[in-house]
Length: 528
Image (cartoon, rainbow, N blue to C red):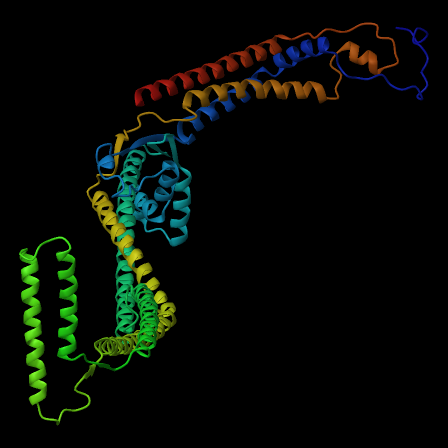
């Protein structure tokens, strides 16, 4: 190659072309570099694969999971029979109640004791950390409203089984104890309130009784009785007043009539009486003679009567002629009977009027007394109403509390005998035989993939970022000279022996890796 054939130097001010390799150029270079560094790449592959295998065998944590299912079942027979008499302590959020029970310190410490963590006597700080870790490994969920599933995971299968079984048992025990404690506390609370209100009711009854004893008018129905009595007395007063007016009017009439009568009247003599009778008989005889003869019986009878009267007149004249002259001038006078009768009626009317006036006075006095009593009753009604209201309110509350106490007693007995809501293990915990989560097979496959990817990635980074020139095209891009030819690589026999040795070692390493994986899988199958 002559100097004249070479082109002149280009100006440095011209920008150099990019040295980035095209994809079709990178692949041959990667293959060449892979052949050159086969042993190194295989060593990296083997190291990563064996390290992953070792970690999967001895360092991979094993997670065992066990679960138990608790069934919360309501009583379908007792509940309708005791409806309204017992209050069922039902639970709506089973999972929430289960978390409150299981995540309590008492249950978690019991689980620590069951798992054997307390055998080393941890410090309080270590115990708190263990409780937090234990709480994180417990999962509680409710697949159905009446089912609670408790799941626990751990690295030890035996401990996983024991802790899961103990958690289920403690959940049932604590839930039933909480139900019994709740119903018992409710009964005790209501019983205490019953005793309090019994004392209040007794005090209110004593106060009401004392007030009624001190106030005779403060009796039940006193106001109604007073109103009825006042109405009756008012009616009686009105009737008595009307009777008195009537009697006064009658007395005035009798007095007016009495003023027109004389107390004494003249008395007719017997002679004048006989004459009067004789004249009357004579008139009757004259009427009969106009019709009948002298022999008619009535005519004969009347003549005989007239003869008798005439004889009586003669005898009376003879008696008066022979009588002494000491007779009073009032012999021919007597008291007027009408006057006497009117005087008697006047006296009777006055007596009745006086009696009626006395009755009216008594009635008015009784009416005044009842009005005063009514005012006293009205004045005591407010205090009596307040005492009565206190008594009735305390009585109603006391009776209601008595019913509630009996209902609470029945509920407490139901919870004590586990008749209302029962909790039982539906699916018990079983010993986990295989770990869950990331298994050894998954870890081994991931390790092989990483053992393949890491050397290839390192090889690609070496080719991509190594500044050395690896192809004629790259040299042509970097240089301003004309590329005439490329001298190929020539391996000497020694180089060929070294290449074969590296290939043999690489195959040996690959065989060792395959053998290690085969032994590891065989060991896992034997231990399974």
